[in-house]
Every structure is written in structure tokens, then in C-alpha cells.
Length: 267
Image 1 (cartoon, helix red, strand yellow):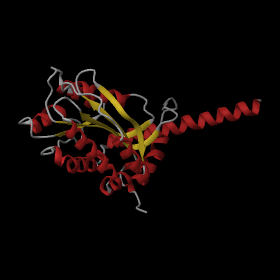
Image 2 (cartoon, rainbow, N blue to C red):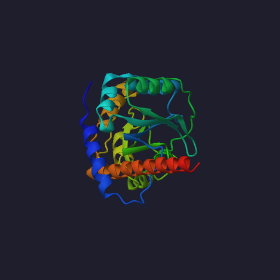
Image 3 (cartoon, one colour):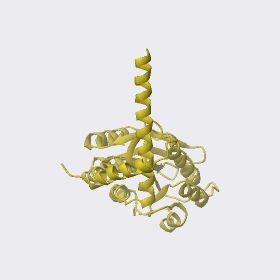
Image 4 (tube, rainbow, N blue to C red):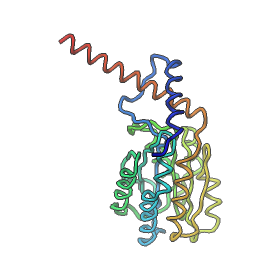
């Protein structure tokens, strides 16, 4: 079995954070620590035909079944990620098609791939990137059951915003919330799309844009993109905050156990 130096580092951080933690800090009692919380936001607007939709879907399926992505997950911070799959089109057209899923071994990675493979197309409207980013940001801000060192939105699409949404504004709001956005523009139908994504969609620490030359090369591009964002080195401040949060989680759980024990004795 591969050893994971990130797990040892995280253990040390938790111990150090526990010593400095205020007693009032609280964390959701059921939060599961992961290295990355990842929203996969896929464009299903009208410019994407059924064949292109299937090529995108197949690309994600093959990526999570691949040794490259699975090894990246197992060797990443904490050795696990939490991922969810979102389809988006126009304003008000976003759907969390596959819910938050813990991936911490090959079995869970393959199960997620199967879940993606079983989805049906949700929309076929206009292109509302700003709304897609806002929706994805909310998913990362909600109590989704996970506590990640990093939070990332992975946006893929074949066109620019055409609903007059403020894409850069939505991007900036996400970045202000501690979220990184990486872009995967699919080239061929709109010139300069890679530059548009780099200037308006991409943002946050270690963010990047990686273009697919067309839909047939999407599978290769998404595998490369996933490996890169899964293995990205987090900012030191993010690691420290994660350590404090997990130490708080430990305190909450210990207090709950003590309270349960006290009630049992009283009975």
C-alpha cells in the first residue's frame, strides 16, 4: 500500500491546532475530513448536442475509473475527496444530478463513475455560467457533510455567458468565500473561449484553465484536469484552518460522548 505523507502532516496539524483551539469553537458533528470538496459543473446548454453530452459524460466516467485519477485521490491530502456532479444551462437551470460522494478508494471511485454514467440530461437552454457558479458556490457553503482543506468548482462548457449574467462577479464572490474555480473550455464553436474562461471564470489560489480542443478530446483533458486539481498543494492558511476545524470536531464529539455517559449514569 502507498504511504501518504499528507496524512501524517494532517495528524500533526490536528494535534497542534487542538492546543490553540478556543473552547467555544464548534464544527458540524458529522463532518467528514477530506482533502478536497469538488463540484463538477457540466454545461448542458442547447449548443451541446446529444452526442457531445454523451462524450462529456463518458469523459468523467473514464476519468474516475482511471488509475491516474484514483491514485491522485489516494495520494492527496487526507487520502480522500468529496465530489458532486452538477448539470447547468440557463438561469434557474441547475441540477445536482449526483449528490455529495466520498471517494477514498477504488471502489468508491468506480461507484461514482457508475452514478455519473446513469444520469440523464437535465436541460438544453441558454448558457448561464454566472448562475452555475453561484449555484455551485452555495453547494460548497452549505453543510454538505464534509470538511475539506480545499474547495473547488470545476466548470466545463463550450460557450460564453449569453444571459447577461456577471460571470466575473460570480467568480469573485466564490473566491471571496475561499473557493477556487478551474475552467475547462471546449473549443471549436466559439473563438477565444479559452481566453474568456481564463479572464472571467478562473479564479482563486492555484486556479487554472485547461482547454479541450473539441468534444472528442474532452476525456483526455478532464482526466488531466482532475489529477492537477486533486493534487494541488493547499495554501498554508487553508491547512491551518482545516486543522482547527477538525480539532473542534473532536471536541464536539468528546463532549457529546461525555454528556451521553452522564445521562446514562443519572438514569
